[in-house]
Length: 87
Image (tube, rainbow, N blue to C red; front, side, top):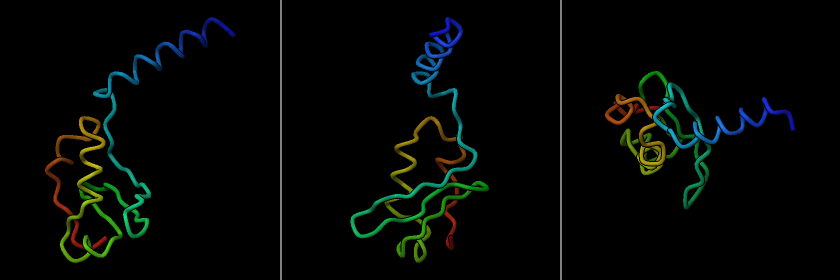
């Protein structure tokens, strides 16, 4: 293996431990809930989810779970971002 690649691998390992280096501006995931799989994400400063609960209440367990999972990797405003009432 080339020495330059070894250096990049070591740097990647260090970066992976320093999650404060990453900040999501936009994200969409497939979230496997108990009853179905939903499109859940954050875009334009708002959370969204395709589940029926989110459609009715503008918040759901899937979007709240993503906030917890991503933690410090989300911009600060994503922790207090308004939930979009319609995906």
